[in-house]
Length: 132
Image (cartoon, rainbow, N blue to C red; front, side):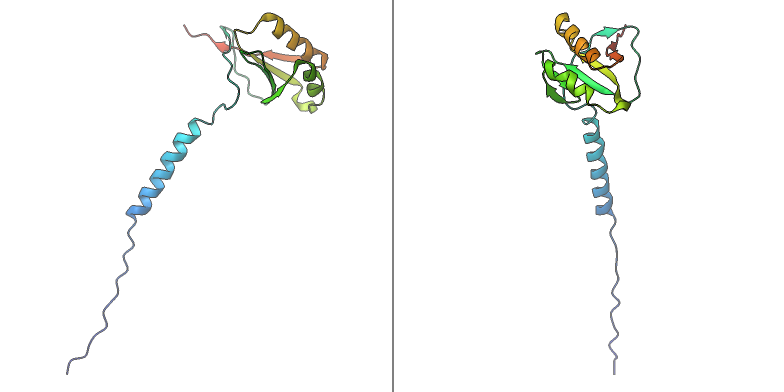
């Protein structure tokens, strides 16, 4: 008489597909994080040899090639800029002006005048470091 023995069930966990998925996620996030660096308004800054990096978070005013004015990515008009800047919190009382290099000097001066009218004393005009 033969006794039928139970068959052992072997459980093998295949980790190769898991490694493939983790690698694909790593590549996806590495590639997409590169494109998130500076979204929004495109401005070609003028170059300067004395340019330095600014580390703090400030209010940024953009002037685009077309003459549009943005305050922290929100489109605004020149007449509204002073009121918007007056309503800013006290810790962001430094304004960085990023103007396209092709914008007329008259518009830049008008924006600077609006910034000064809002009581802003610290104004930084953004430039790019000239490469030799």
